[in-house]
Image 1 (tube, rainbow, N blue to C red):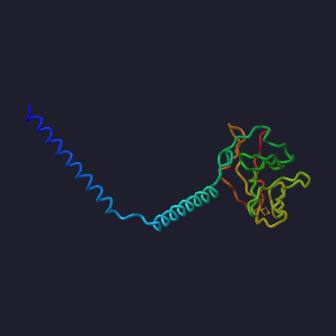
Image 2 (image 1 turned 135 degrees about the horizontal axis):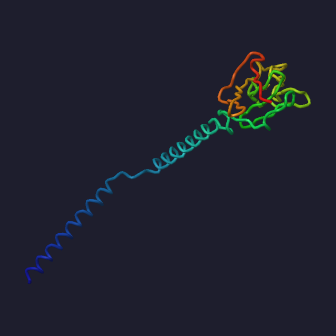
Image 3 (image 1 turned 30 degrees about the vertical axis):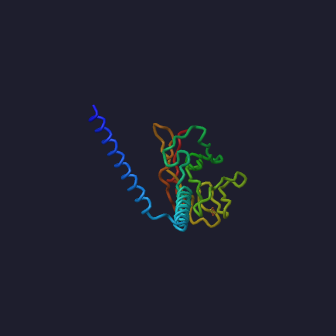
Length: 190
Ligand code: FES
């Protein structure tokens, strides 16, 4: 019995010695590690803050210039009867597709509402009976042809299709032109 007690006491003493040795080595390692100086701390703090500010500015820049999708622009848009003006009437704006639908003697035109000068949205001015860009004064007639102002060409247009789906405007293709030709107009079902 006595020999068992002695053996246990011996094992406990060994464990205590080993623990003391490990603690001493850890303390020694900690003391040996170089301490961060105040200057280093400030340097790293400034570097971190600058990096964060730059990343935030870059994210804001990208978000600002990322193209914003508006409605169904870029798709084929089926028109309802209420979207189609009578021949000779004022055009009807289609905000989803960003175009004016105008119905003239040769048929209908879907005119892209973006001014070909510097890109302002061109309104129809009922009192003038024509499109008149507020930005720099470009004026376009009912066919979208430039009458006055700095615009270099007629308003661009989009294709109109008439089929089983009814009257559809394809806003995925913006068509440039140098003038008006009756073949650009689409005859609509009455
Ligand atoms: S953007 Fe229309 S006239 Fe300049």
